Image (cartoon, rainbow, N blue to C red; front, top):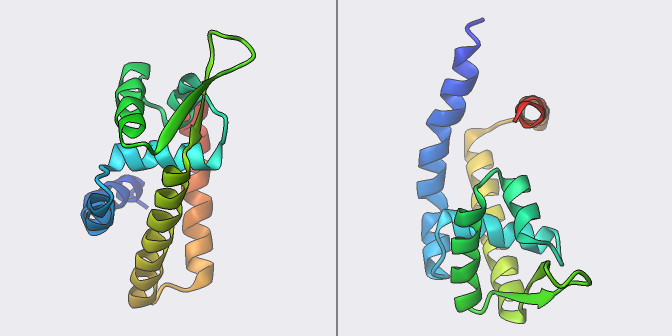
Length: 142
């Protein structure tokens, strides 16, 4: 097998998928990067900028810029940690609402897409497993 097909197909899927979910994000005045950081905070309450940067593989200045926008939208709040140099990030009540709504709407769109594609559960489980293995390998090398 030509292994480049795996990565070519992944990257070919990425842009159309982003365009597919963008209207949902735009309704909440979010772009993709902001949604991924908001989602990360929703999954890891009381997290830090450094932790988000590491988990999302984005530079700290980029994370800082995204967080500034999310704080201005009142989706995220920052509180001092035990170590005063660390700022802990959490979703505000509005941020929790937006996180819940966007997550559910995207899940609906994803379910519809999977249904239309007629992919079987076993096929999807294999894809998820392979992508996770590749991610773990890349993560270990970075």
